[in-house]
Image 1 (cartoon, rainbow, N blue to C red):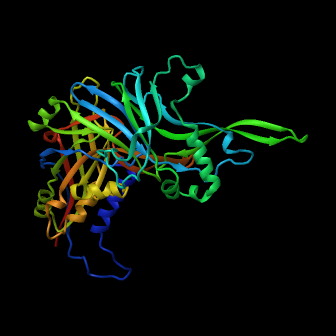
Image 2: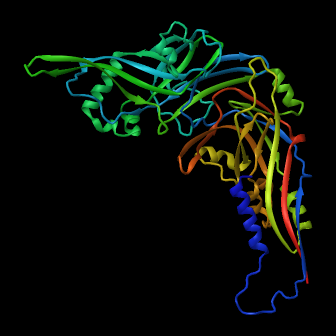
Length: 461
Protein backbone atom coordinates (compact mmCIF):
# COMPACT_ATOMS: atom_id res chain seq x y z
CA UNK A 1 0.00 0.00 0.00
CA UNK A 2 1.29 3.45 -0.85
CA UNK A 3 2.02 5.89 2.00
CA UNK A 4 -0.84 8.21 0.97
CA UNK A 5 -3.29 5.28 0.88
CA UNK A 6 -2.18 4.12 4.32
CA UNK A 7 -2.88 7.57 5.77
CA UNK A 8 -6.33 7.56 4.14
CA UNK A 9 -7.18 4.19 5.70
CA UNK A 10 -6.02 5.25 9.16
CA UNK A 11 -8.07 8.43 8.85
CA UNK A 12 -11.14 6.48 7.78
CA UNK A 13 -10.83 4.11 10.73
CA UNK A 14 -10.23 6.99 13.14
CA UNK A 15 -13.34 8.83 12.03
CA UNK A 16 -15.46 5.77 12.75
CA UNK A 17 -14.13 5.34 16.27
CA UNK A 18 -14.00 8.96 17.44
CA UNK A 19 -17.05 10.49 19.19
CA UNK A 20 -17.44 14.22 18.59
CA UNK A 21 -18.17 16.73 21.38
CA UNK A 22 -18.61 20.46 21.93
CA UNK A 23 -17.17 22.92 24.46
CA UNK A 24 -19.99 22.39 27.00
CA UNK A 25 -19.46 19.93 29.81
CA UNK A 26 -21.42 16.73 29.35
CA UNK A 27 -21.79 13.34 30.97
CA UNK A 28 -22.09 11.69 27.55
CA UNK A 29 -19.31 9.11 27.30
CA UNK A 30 -18.39 9.29 30.96
CA UNK A 31 -19.42 5.66 31.42
CA UNK A 32 -16.80 4.42 28.98
CA UNK A 33 -14.02 3.09 31.16
CA UNK A 34 -12.11 0.87 28.78
CA UNK A 35 -12.07 -0.17 25.14
CA UNK A 36 -10.01 -2.55 23.07
CA UNK A 37 -9.00 -2.28 19.40
CA UNK A 38 -7.96 -5.36 17.46
CA UNK A 39 -6.90 -5.86 13.86
CA UNK A 40 -7.85 -9.17 12.20
CA UNK A 41 -6.04 -10.55 9.17
CA UNK A 42 -7.89 -13.44 7.54
CA UNK A 43 -6.21 -15.36 4.73
CA UNK A 44 -7.95 -18.73 5.00
CA UNK A 45 -9.96 -18.46 1.79
CA UNK A 46 -9.45 -20.85 -1.13
CA UNK A 47 -10.21 -20.67 -4.85
CA UNK A 48 -10.58 -23.10 -7.74
CA UNK A 49 -11.06 -22.20 -11.41
CA UNK A 50 -11.36 -23.51 -14.95
CA UNK A 51 -10.14 -22.58 -18.41
CA UNK A 52 -12.85 -21.28 -20.75
CA UNK A 53 -12.56 -20.83 -24.51
CA UNK A 54 -11.98 -17.26 -25.69
CA UNK A 55 -12.11 -17.69 -29.45
CA UNK A 56 -12.91 -14.08 -30.38
CA UNK A 57 -11.79 -10.74 -28.96
CA UNK A 58 -12.20 -7.12 -29.96
CA UNK A 59 -8.73 -5.87 -30.84
CA UNK A 60 -9.56 -2.21 -30.04
CA UNK A 61 -5.98 -1.36 -30.90
CA UNK A 62 -3.89 0.27 -33.62
CA UNK A 63 -1.32 -2.53 -33.40
CA UNK A 64 -1.49 -4.83 -36.41
CA UNK A 65 -0.21 -8.41 -36.32
CA UNK A 66 0.94 -9.97 -39.60
CA UNK A 67 2.34 -13.40 -40.34
CA UNK A 68 2.29 -17.07 -39.46
CA UNK A 69 4.19 -19.14 -36.94
CA UNK A 70 4.32 -22.73 -35.69
CA UNK A 71 5.63 -23.14 -32.15
CA UNK A 72 5.99 -26.53 -30.48
CA UNK A 73 4.29 -26.45 -27.11
CA UNK A 74 2.03 -23.59 -28.18
CA UNK A 75 0.49 -24.23 -31.59
CA UNK A 76 -0.03 -22.53 -34.95
CA UNK A 77 -0.93 -18.85 -35.09
CA UNK A 78 -1.72 -16.66 -38.10
CA UNK A 79 -2.95 -13.10 -38.40
CA UNK A 80 -3.87 -10.76 -41.21
CA UNK A 81 -5.44 -7.31 -41.15
CA UNK A 82 -8.43 -5.30 -42.34
CA UNK A 83 -8.41 -1.57 -41.77
CA UNK A 84 -10.05 1.69 -42.72
CA UNK A 85 -8.17 5.01 -42.95
CA UNK A 86 -8.48 8.47 -41.48
CA UNK A 87 -8.15 10.99 -44.32
CA UNK A 88 -6.17 14.19 -44.23
CA UNK A 89 -8.60 17.11 -44.11
CA UNK A 90 -6.76 18.82 -46.96
CA UNK A 91 -4.62 17.73 -49.88
CA UNK A 92 -1.90 19.78 -51.54
CA UNK A 93 -3.41 21.13 -54.77
CA UNK A 94 -1.44 24.35 -55.32
CA UNK A 95 0.56 23.81 -58.48
CA UNK A 96 -0.48 20.15 -58.52
CA UNK A 97 -2.62 18.39 -61.13
CA UNK A 98 -3.78 14.81 -61.39
CA UNK A 99 -0.93 14.16 -63.82
CA UNK A 100 1.56 15.44 -61.24
CA UNK A 101 0.91 12.40 -59.04
CA UNK A 102 3.86 10.02 -59.33
CA UNK A 103 3.14 7.16 -56.94
CA UNK A 104 1.51 5.93 -53.75
CA UNK A 105 2.93 3.68 -51.03
CA UNK A 106 1.52 1.83 -48.05
CA UNK A 107 3.97 2.41 -45.18
CA UNK A 108 3.97 0.12 -42.12
CA UNK A 109 6.32 0.97 -39.25
CA UNK A 110 7.76 -1.86 -37.17
CA UNK A 111 9.82 -0.96 -34.10
CA UNK A 112 13.04 -2.96 -33.88
CA UNK A 113 12.46 -6.21 -32.07
CA UNK A 114 8.67 -6.13 -32.45
CA UNK A 115 8.38 -9.56 -34.01
CA UNK A 116 8.30 -13.21 -32.99
CA UNK A 117 10.35 -15.72 -34.94
CA UNK A 118 13.16 -15.31 -37.46
CA UNK A 119 13.86 -11.76 -38.63
CA UNK A 120 15.34 -12.87 -41.97
CA UNK A 121 12.62 -15.34 -42.93
CA UNK A 122 11.03 -14.05 -46.15
CA UNK A 123 7.31 -13.42 -45.70
CA UNK A 124 4.84 -12.30 -48.34
CA UNK A 125 1.82 -10.03 -48.13
CA UNK A 126 -0.85 -9.01 -50.63
CA UNK A 127 -3.05 -5.92 -50.39
CA UNK A 128 -6.66 -5.73 -51.59
CA UNK A 129 -9.18 -2.93 -51.64
CA UNK A 130 -12.28 -3.44 -49.51
CA UNK A 131 -15.60 -3.16 -51.34
CA UNK A 132 -17.92 -3.29 -48.30
CA UNK A 133 -18.16 -1.47 -44.98
CA UNK A 134 -16.48 -3.33 -42.15
CA UNK A 135 -18.82 -4.40 -39.33
CA UNK A 136 -18.70 -2.61 -35.99
CA UNK A 137 -18.05 -4.12 -33.54
CA UNK A 138 -15.59 -6.40 -35.26
CA UNK A 139 -13.90 -9.43 -33.71
CA UNK A 140 -10.68 -11.38 -34.14
CA UNK A 141 -12.47 -14.28 -35.88
CA UNK A 142 -13.69 -11.97 -38.66
CA UNK A 143 -13.68 -13.60 -42.11
CA UNK A 144 -12.94 -11.02 -44.86
CA UNK A 145 -14.37 -13.27 -47.59
CA UNK A 146 -16.91 -11.23 -49.55
CA UNK A 147 -15.41 -7.91 -48.41
CA UNK A 148 -12.83 -7.79 -51.21
CA UNK A 149 -12.29 -9.05 -54.76
CA UNK A 150 -9.50 -11.68 -54.81
CA UNK A 151 -8.84 -10.86 -58.48
CA UNK A 152 -8.18 -7.16 -57.76
CA UNK A 153 -4.86 -7.11 -55.91
CA UNK A 154 -3.47 -3.59 -55.51
CA UNK A 155 -0.08 -4.40 -54.00
CA UNK A 156 2.27 -7.17 -52.89
CA UNK A 157 5.67 -7.54 -51.24
CA UNK A 158 8.17 -10.09 -49.96
CA UNK A 159 9.67 -8.63 -46.78
CA UNK A 160 11.67 -9.32 -43.62
CA UNK A 161 12.39 -7.39 -40.43
CA UNK A 162 16.17 -7.62 -40.49
CA UNK A 163 18.39 -4.52 -40.67
CA UNK A 164 21.14 -6.43 -42.50
CA UNK A 165 22.21 -4.57 -45.63
CA UNK A 166 20.64 -1.29 -44.53
CA UNK A 167 22.59 1.94 -44.18
CA UNK A 168 23.88 3.01 -40.78
CA UNK A 169 21.22 5.72 -40.56
CA UNK A 170 18.44 3.17 -41.05
CA UNK A 171 20.03 0.73 -38.63
CA UNK A 172 20.15 3.45 -35.98
CA UNK A 173 16.51 4.38 -36.47
CA UNK A 174 14.07 3.09 -33.88
CA UNK A 175 11.87 1.38 -36.46
CA UNK A 176 11.92 -0.52 -39.73
CA UNK A 177 9.49 0.34 -42.52
CA UNK A 178 7.62 -2.17 -44.66
CA UNK A 179 6.79 -0.28 -47.85
CA UNK A 180 4.30 -1.61 -50.41
CA UNK A 181 3.89 0.15 -53.76
CA UNK A 182 0.24 0.82 -54.61
CA UNK A 183 -1.18 1.79 -58.03
CA UNK A 184 -0.58 5.32 -59.22
CA UNK A 185 -4.19 5.31 -60.40
CA UNK A 186 -5.37 4.96 -56.80
CA UNK A 187 -3.46 8.10 -55.79
CA UNK A 188 -4.93 9.93 -58.77
CA UNK A 189 -8.39 8.72 -57.74
CA UNK A 190 -7.90 10.21 -54.27
CA UNK A 191 -6.68 13.51 -55.73
CA UNK A 192 -9.64 13.76 -58.12
CA UNK A 193 -12.12 12.88 -55.36
CA UNK A 194 -10.73 15.66 -53.20
CA UNK A 195 -10.83 18.23 -56.00
CA UNK A 196 -14.43 17.32 -56.83
CA UNK A 197 -15.70 17.32 -53.23
CA UNK A 198 -13.32 18.26 -50.39
CA UNK A 199 -16.08 17.64 -47.82
CA UNK A 200 -15.65 13.91 -48.36
CA UNK A 201 -12.28 14.26 -46.64
CA UNK A 202 -13.60 16.16 -43.64
CA UNK A 203 -14.46 13.10 -41.55
CA UNK A 204 -13.65 9.38 -41.56
CA UNK A 205 -17.30 8.44 -42.15
CA UNK A 206 -17.59 10.66 -45.23
CA UNK A 207 -14.30 9.35 -46.60
CA UNK A 208 -15.17 5.71 -45.97
CA UNK A 209 -18.72 5.98 -47.30
CA UNK A 210 -17.94 7.99 -50.41
CA UNK A 211 -14.30 7.49 -51.33
CA UNK A 212 -12.45 4.49 -49.90
CA UNK A 213 -13.64 1.57 -47.73
CA UNK A 214 -10.17 0.46 -46.64
CA UNK A 215 -7.81 -2.44 -47.31
CA UNK A 216 -7.28 -6.10 -46.54
CA UNK A 217 -3.65 -7.20 -45.97
CA UNK A 218 -3.27 -10.97 -46.20
CA UNK A 219 -0.34 -13.31 -45.75
CA UNK A 220 0.56 -14.80 -49.12
CA UNK A 221 3.85 -16.54 -48.48
CA UNK A 222 6.08 -17.86 -45.73
CA UNK A 223 5.88 -19.22 -42.20
CA UNK A 224 8.10 -18.44 -39.25
CA UNK A 225 7.49 -14.87 -38.16
CA UNK A 226 4.78 -12.70 -36.63
CA UNK A 227 5.41 -9.00 -37.19
CA UNK A 228 3.82 -6.32 -35.03
CA UNK A 229 3.06 -3.16 -37.02
CA UNK A 230 2.79 -0.04 -34.86
CA UNK A 231 1.81 2.58 -37.44
CA UNK A 232 0.24 2.35 -40.90
CA UNK A 233 -0.30 5.14 -43.43
CA UNK A 234 -0.44 5.97 -47.13
CA UNK A 235 2.19 8.28 -48.56
CA UNK A 236 1.74 10.09 -51.87
CA UNK A 237 4.65 11.27 -54.05
CA UNK A 238 4.02 14.07 -56.55
CA UNK A 239 5.43 17.12 -58.33
CA UNK A 240 4.52 20.72 -57.58
CA UNK A 241 4.93 23.42 -60.23
CA UNK A 242 5.56 27.03 -59.19
CA UNK A 243 6.33 30.21 -61.13
CA UNK A 244 9.64 32.03 -60.66
CA UNK A 245 9.86 35.81 -60.87
CA UNK A 246 10.96 35.62 -64.50
CA UNK A 247 7.83 33.65 -65.39
CA UNK A 248 9.51 30.29 -65.85
CA UNK A 249 8.30 27.16 -64.11
CA UNK A 250 10.05 25.42 -61.24
CA UNK A 251 9.16 21.81 -60.54
CA UNK A 252 9.64 20.47 -57.02
CA UNK A 253 9.34 16.90 -55.81
CA UNK A 254 7.06 16.50 -52.80
CA UNK A 255 5.49 13.84 -50.63
CA UNK A 256 2.70 13.82 -48.06
CA UNK A 257 1.14 11.36 -45.63
CA UNK A 258 -2.52 11.65 -46.47
CA UNK A 259 -4.20 8.61 -44.90
CA UNK A 260 -3.44 6.90 -41.58
CA UNK A 261 -4.73 4.25 -39.20
CA UNK A 262 -6.06 6.06 -36.12
CA UNK A 263 -8.32 5.25 -33.12
CA UNK A 264 -11.32 6.84 -34.87
CA UNK A 265 -11.59 4.17 -37.56
CA UNK A 266 -12.04 0.38 -37.59
CA UNK A 267 -8.95 -1.81 -37.73
CA UNK A 268 -8.85 -5.51 -36.90
CA UNK A 269 -6.47 -8.44 -36.63
CA UNK A 270 -8.08 -11.55 -38.12
CA UNK A 271 -6.52 -14.24 -35.94
CA UNK A 272 -6.39 -17.98 -36.47
CA UNK A 273 -5.10 -20.12 -33.59
CA UNK A 274 -4.77 -23.90 -33.41
CA UNK A 275 -3.35 -24.88 -30.05
CA UNK A 276 -0.90 -27.74 -29.74
CA UNK A 277 -2.24 -31.03 -28.29
CA UNK A 278 0.13 -30.62 -25.34
CA UNK A 279 -1.73 -27.40 -24.41
CA UNK A 280 -5.24 -28.77 -24.85
CA UNK A 281 -4.24 -31.88 -22.87
CA UNK A 282 -3.12 -29.69 -19.94
CA UNK A 283 -6.49 -27.91 -19.99
CA UNK A 284 -8.38 -31.22 -20.25
CA UNK A 285 -6.47 -32.47 -17.20
CA UNK A 286 -7.57 -29.45 -15.15
CA UNK A 287 -4.75 -26.93 -15.52
CA UNK A 288 -5.92 -23.31 -15.51
CA UNK A 289 -4.32 -21.74 -18.60
CA UNK A 290 -4.74 -18.24 -20.01
CA UNK A 291 -3.67 -18.27 -23.67
CA UNK A 292 -3.48 -15.33 -26.07
CA UNK A 293 -4.15 -13.87 -28.54
CA UNK A 294 -7.58 -15.48 -28.31
CA UNK A 295 -7.38 -19.04 -26.97
CA UNK A 296 -8.44 -19.31 -23.32
CA UNK A 297 -9.39 -17.21 -20.31
CA UNK A 298 -9.73 -18.52 -16.76
CA UNK A 299 -13.01 -18.25 -14.87
CA UNK A 300 -13.50 -18.67 -11.11
CA UNK A 301 -15.77 -17.87 -8.18
CA UNK A 302 -14.30 -15.34 -5.78
CA UNK A 303 -15.13 -16.41 -2.17
CA UNK A 304 -17.27 -13.32 -1.52
CA UNK A 305 -19.87 -15.12 0.59
CA UNK A 306 -17.20 -16.65 2.84
CA UNK A 307 -15.47 -13.31 3.32
CA UNK A 308 -18.69 -11.53 4.26
CA UNK A 309 -19.77 -14.37 6.58
CA UNK A 310 -16.40 -14.36 8.34
CA UNK A 311 -16.52 -10.61 8.81
CA UNK A 312 -20.07 -10.49 10.13
CA UNK A 313 -19.43 -13.38 12.51
CA UNK A 314 -16.36 -11.78 14.05
CA UNK A 315 -16.89 -8.03 13.86
CA UNK A 316 -17.09 -6.06 17.10
CA UNK A 317 -19.24 -3.20 18.37
CA UNK A 318 -17.52 -0.86 15.93
CA UNK A 319 -15.77 -2.31 12.88
CA UNK A 320 -14.00 -1.07 9.79
CA UNK A 321 -12.88 -2.92 6.69
CA UNK A 322 -9.26 -2.00 6.02
CA UNK A 323 -8.02 -3.91 2.96
CA UNK A 324 -8.81 -6.80 0.66
CA UNK A 325 -5.99 -8.00 -1.60
CA UNK A 326 -5.53 -10.89 -4.00
CA UNK A 327 -2.08 -12.30 -4.79
CA UNK A 328 -2.18 -14.69 -7.73
CA UNK A 329 0.96 -16.78 -8.41
CA UNK A 330 1.44 -18.03 -11.96
CA UNK A 331 3.85 -20.19 -13.93
CA UNK A 332 5.04 -20.51 -17.50
CA UNK A 333 4.08 -23.33 -19.86
CA UNK A 334 7.06 -24.95 -21.64
CA UNK A 335 7.25 -24.14 -25.36
CA UNK A 336 9.95 -23.73 -28.02
CA UNK A 337 9.61 -19.95 -28.34
CA UNK A 338 9.57 -19.12 -24.64
CA UNK A 339 6.11 -17.57 -24.71
CA UNK A 340 5.52 -16.62 -21.09
CA UNK A 341 2.85 -14.97 -18.94
CA UNK A 342 0.95 -11.99 -20.38
CA UNK A 343 2.40 -8.60 -19.38
CA UNK A 344 -0.88 -7.54 -17.75
CA UNK A 345 -4.06 -9.24 -16.61
CA UNK A 346 -7.62 -7.97 -16.26
CA UNK A 347 -9.73 -9.35 -13.42
CA UNK A 348 -13.37 -8.62 -14.23
CA UNK A 349 -16.83 -9.85 -13.35
CA UNK A 350 -17.85 -12.30 -16.07
CA UNK A 351 -21.08 -10.47 -16.90
CA UNK A 352 -19.17 -7.16 -17.33
CA UNK A 353 -16.44 -8.33 -19.70
CA UNK A 354 -18.22 -7.78 -23.04
CA UNK A 355 -19.34 -4.24 -22.25
CA UNK A 356 -15.93 -3.38 -20.78
CA UNK A 357 -14.18 -3.84 -24.13
CA UNK A 358 -17.16 -2.69 -26.20
CA UNK A 359 -17.25 0.67 -24.39
CA UNK A 360 -13.47 1.11 -24.02
CA UNK A 361 -13.85 1.15 -20.25
CA UNK A 362 -11.06 1.46 -17.71
CA UNK A 363 -10.77 -0.61 -14.49
CA UNK A 364 -13.01 0.88 -11.80
CA UNK A 365 -11.72 -1.22 -8.86
CA UNK A 366 -15.28 -2.32 -8.14
CA UNK A 367 -16.17 -4.67 -11.00
CA UNK A 368 -12.82 -4.69 -12.82
CA UNK A 369 -9.17 -4.60 -11.79
CA UNK A 370 -5.84 -4.75 -13.61
CA UNK A 371 -2.38 -5.91 -12.59
CA UNK A 372 1.01 -6.06 -14.31
CA UNK A 373 3.01 -9.25 -14.25
CA UNK A 374 5.50 -9.24 -11.38
CA UNK A 375 8.33 -11.31 -12.88
CA UNK A 376 10.41 -11.22 -9.69
CA UNK A 377 7.65 -12.89 -7.66
CA UNK A 378 5.93 -14.62 -10.60
CA UNK A 379 2.50 -13.30 -9.77
CA UNK A 380 -0.24 -10.77 -10.48
CA UNK A 381 -1.13 -8.70 -7.43
CA UNK A 382 -4.56 -7.10 -7.18
CA UNK A 383 -4.21 -4.79 -4.20
CA UNK A 384 -7.41 -2.74 -4.26
CA UNK A 385 -10.46 -4.98 -3.87
CA UNK A 386 -11.81 -3.12 -0.82
CA UNK A 387 -14.30 -1.03 -2.82
CA UNK A 388 -15.67 -4.19 -4.40
CA UNK A 389 -16.28 -5.72 -0.97
CA UNK A 390 -17.81 -2.49 0.37
CA UNK A 391 -20.27 -2.48 -2.54
CA UNK A 392 -21.37 -6.02 -1.62
CA UNK A 393 -21.18 -6.07 2.18
CA UNK A 394 -24.81 -5.05 2.78
CA UNK A 395 -26.34 -6.48 -0.39
CA UNK A 396 -29.31 -8.68 0.56
CA UNK A 397 -29.37 -10.96 -2.48
CA UNK A 398 -25.87 -11.98 -3.61
CA UNK A 399 -25.92 -14.06 -6.80
CA UNK A 400 -23.19 -15.80 -8.84
CA UNK A 401 -23.07 -12.72 -11.09
CA UNK A 402 -21.65 -10.84 -8.11
CA UNK A 403 -18.63 -13.09 -7.61
CA UNK A 404 -17.94 -14.98 -10.87
CA UNK A 405 -14.78 -13.44 -12.32
CA UNK A 406 -12.73 -13.88 -15.47
CA UNK A 407 -8.98 -13.46 -15.90
CA UNK A 408 -8.10 -12.27 -19.39
CA UNK A 409 -4.76 -10.94 -20.76
CA UNK A 410 -4.67 -7.25 -21.69
CA UNK A 411 -2.43 -4.51 -23.00
CA UNK A 412 -2.43 -1.39 -20.82
CA UNK A 413 -1.72 1.99 -22.42
CA UNK A 414 -0.49 4.74 -20.11
CA UNK A 415 0.45 8.40 -20.27
CA UNK A 416 3.05 9.97 -17.99
CA UNK A 417 2.92 13.63 -17.02
CA UNK A 418 4.50 15.86 -14.39
CA UNK A 419 7.44 18.11 -13.74
CA UNK A 420 10.48 18.62 -11.52
CA UNK A 421 8.52 20.03 -8.59
CA UNK A 422 5.50 17.75 -8.44
CA UNK A 423 6.97 14.53 -9.78
CA UNK A 424 5.47 12.28 -12.43
CA UNK A 425 1.98 10.83 -12.61
CA UNK A 426 1.11 7.77 -14.68
CA UNK A 427 -2.45 7.56 -15.98
CA UNK A 428 -4.03 4.51 -17.61
CA UNK A 429 -5.58 5.62 -20.89
CA UNK A 430 -6.72 2.33 -22.42
CA UNK A 431 -7.05 -1.37 -21.63
CA UNK A 432 -7.36 -3.63 -24.68
CA UNK A 433 -7.19 -7.39 -25.28
CA UNK A 434 -3.59 -8.56 -25.56
CA UNK A 435 -2.96 -9.41 -29.21
CA UNK A 436 0.60 -8.11 -29.56
CA UNK A 437 2.27 -11.51 -29.19
CA UNK A 438 1.51 -15.04 -28.05
CA UNK A 439 1.40 -15.63 -24.29
CA UNK A 440 0.63 -18.57 -22.00
CA UNK A 441 -0.04 -18.18 -18.29
CA UNK A 442 -0.63 -21.05 -15.87
CA UNK A 443 -2.75 -19.85 -12.94
CA UNK A 444 -1.80 -21.44 -9.60
CA UNK A 445 -4.97 -21.13 -7.56
CA UNK A 446 -3.64 -23.57 -4.97
CA UNK A 447 -0.97 -20.98 -4.07
CA UNK A 448 -3.19 -17.90 -4.35
CA UNK A 449 -3.66 -15.77 -1.25
CA UNK A 450 -6.63 -13.57 -0.41
CA UNK A 451 -5.78 -11.30 2.49
CA UNK A 452 -8.70 -9.65 4.27
CA UNK A 453 -7.92 -7.12 7.01
CA UNK A 454 -10.45 -5.43 9.28
CA UNK A 455 -10.42 -3.61 12.64
CA UNK A 456 -12.67 -4.10 15.63
CA UNK A 457 -13.28 -1.92 18.68
CA UNK A 458 -14.88 -3.60 21.66
CA UNK A 459 -16.37 -0.95 23.97
CA UNK A 460 -16.80 -1.62 27.69
CA UNK A 461 -19.18 0.50 29.79
